[in-house]
Length: 105
Image (cartoon, rainbow, N blue to C red):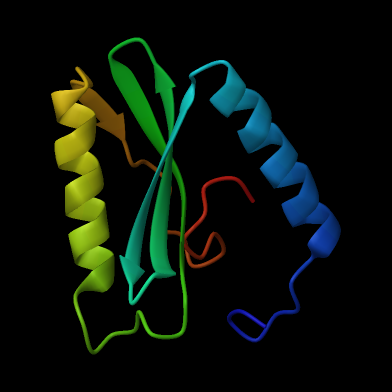
């Protein structure tokens, strides 16, 4: 459960399928932070030319409000996107409490 809601497996299956298609076309970048060889936080960005849109982030239970894993991952993502020629990143709409940490819902 996330935010006291049951995960919708069908939704996430469709989302991952879309992400896979975007990745095959080089229109998607995902950044993952690991701790002890376990993924603990990830960010996903859509890419089009020199522009990017923040789509999604997710975390394991270890990445909580008592550490900076999420901040580190986001900043690392931004630095890497910049190094790859991205000059504009769209974060609009991510702060809605109905969106949680996803722009794709």
